[in-house]
Image (cartoon, rainbow, N blue to C red; front, side):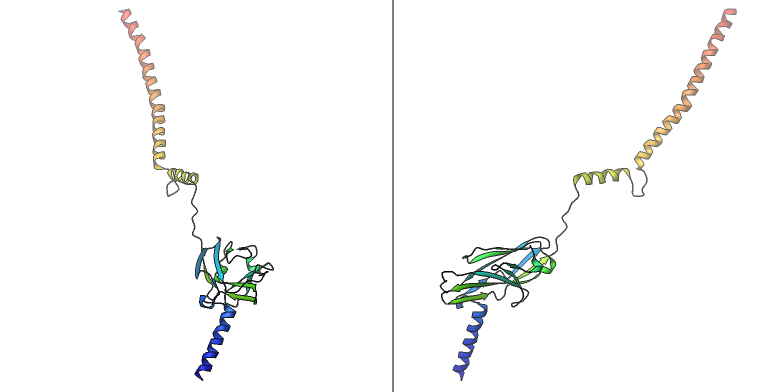
Length: 219
């Protein structure tokens, strides 16, 4: 009875390995980073590689597809025939060449809704028929919000400083400018008052001088 259970368990494990293709002990797997983080609005690259023990057919017809969210989730990319999920329209690029066993999936213009787990699956034709397997854990992508790094230009800062120098917090004129205006006003007032006064004094002195001379001549 125990031997029968062991045989059933071995068969189950083999079936799981053929459908999901996991550890190196089975001879085939898809490797991806466990976690990646990207910034909203930026881009991210998910590298992948795979290996297998079978002999390839003359025309291996290698094909790379990607799923997201869960292991049996929706397909978001297919290398052949070309397919891109509507959510990722014009935002997915697969850097991979037919025959290579590694590549990179690039996601452009990251959105907050792109945060999910991504799974790469491989299809290829061998001398023993078509084989396909997929990464089991996949890659968990985290999308963070971009930090505000925008700084004001030097001209804007200079303008702000200049404005601050001309205006106080109460919206009134700068005290130094007010003092300067008051001093100018005082000088003008003094000039208006003193100049005529000096002129009058000179005029009176001039009129008195001839009269004094005439009195001295008469004597």
